[in-house]
Length: 407
Image (tube, rainbow, N blue to C red; front, side, top):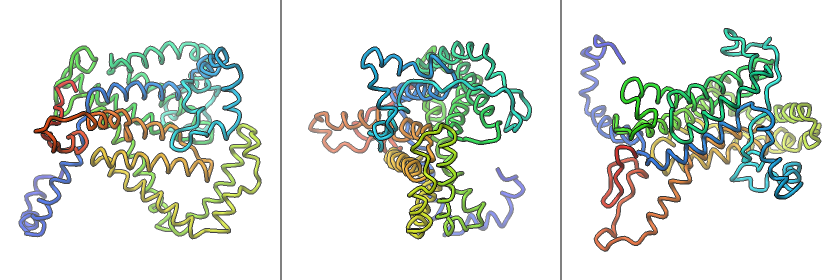
């Protein structure tokens, strides 16, 4: 906010009175209101909680038996079949795109951390010793913290307590991982979404209604939204912010030369292939000169410049996904394909980001519900039903369902 001495300056008043600026203000005001976004139904928040709980579980460094639980259970039903699929990259990626690799859709956790030092401290590791995440005693205790919290989260209960706990585990464990001399930000977006949801529910519990925040009674509207709707909205904001910052920073850090020199990412492709090979010694990465790097650097550098520039523009304009449900769906699908091509071309995978795009931007449960509503026979007097307010982000249309206080 600007100080009163500046907002009341005669020059500011004169500029406000200019017809062009006044007209522009009138034209942009509806756009700004539309960017407030659609209101969400309670069933959407229910689906999102359950799906997000699964994604958070997949990200947690719980180790065995949680890190291979589903594979072991599959042996009782179809011995060896799932293991054969996961061992073959072609079979593992049979549903990709648009879906993720099969290995990334299994309800299994990450392996336990094994680091006993943080010599290359990153973030909060400069102030806190996080090596306790690798202590065998804490590793045995961690599932007793994480799993009950996730079950309560999926049920919508106790969120002002369980969300901060999950946030601390996510940020702390991944900070320890990033304090070993190499940085991987594949879980950054997930941790930020957890942080945003934590702030929303804790703030609501303190300032408004702690019983509703804990899921003990229906939530009333606050600023036109329920606490659950605010939680969804700020999760979407965090996702979009991650993309916009990543897109804007590229031309800024390169003084605008990123678009001209983007084909040199082919060099990073070679480095990524070698890093992936020496990390797991998988033969599919043991390619001294990857074909895609030759394509980028030698054969079609101009085509690659255009293609990668489109990817950066997609990141920069990802904020348009906040405008309404249709653009959220459109950008969500585009971002999933964006990650797919990054994985295909450069071996850079951000499966966690893709999962969040599916949950909070694409939001299939809503579109299934929307199609069912449109396929229902309508009374004669309601044939010309306008677009659903939850779709358009505007005022309720004739015949559109109204959101209750706890929706």
